[in-house]
Length: 356
Ligand code: COI
Image (cartoon, rainbow, N blue to C red; front, side, top):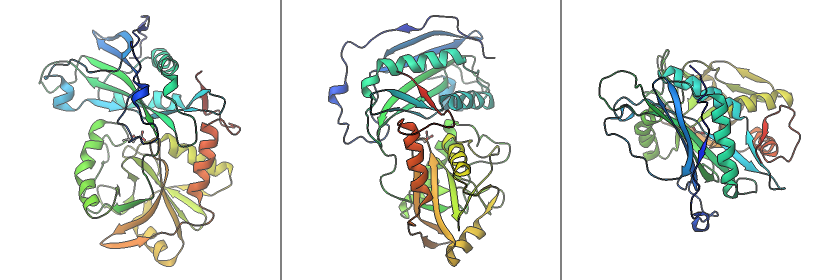
């Protein structure tokens, strides 16, 4: 179901902005939120009472199904301010479609398109001052849906809350990322929820990622659950391997998130006449390429992380260091993406969405 609420968006403004209290030079990712948030409730088969109100706590039953059965999905998107002070979103339609796909997979109701875009653009207009200009600065936007019906019966909730929060952001990873290739734990399996942006997918990664962190690695590159022979994605990012001058990345499947940055990198590579292969990538071929010097780069691609170069990977106890090449594809795609996002270049793909 994707019915409109047909209700007017209510607006309650904060009496006093908190913006003066924020140290925009030293932001930790995702810790500070803007003055307002959006909220809309699902009940009796429809979405009701869309409202933008001051950011603040919720009152919710401790029996809400989200706490017991994890019916929760989210999105990550970004707004950018250009040098003329205009605010832009990057490919918002993709996030809108994906949150609904995630909802369907978790037996949750879809959200109406018109309400999503009205809420998003109104919120951005109200909190425009929180979008800081300059390369590397952005406003990270977090739409999410949770099951709110009180009851511990193990069945889909009949009530939900859709919300949007916004958080001023700089880099997600400071510096290059060292990764470990998964040999035991798995992120997702055939027929599972790996392709959905389900909150539980992230919870399940925390324990193995903590173990990897104790060994000096920030992220895990997940492999297929059945054989651990094929490279899939890196938890908060999709992942690309450059062997000689060809880019390799795992194809989208029901185990892998259909990343917006991933598909943008593929489109940019095609435009730049760089060969891209979306195919299953064996761990052994990447290890071999690292050994024979043909592995030039590994980089992650995601909304929060943008493009994050991987400086080393570990497999079977062996660490392979990667030197940044002079003609880095990671650096090139990051610049090309940012030039489009900050309205500094042509937008041949129509990815920019003007807000205000
Ligand atoms: C994003 O890039 O939006 C993500 O989903 C990463 C997030 C878990 C911080």
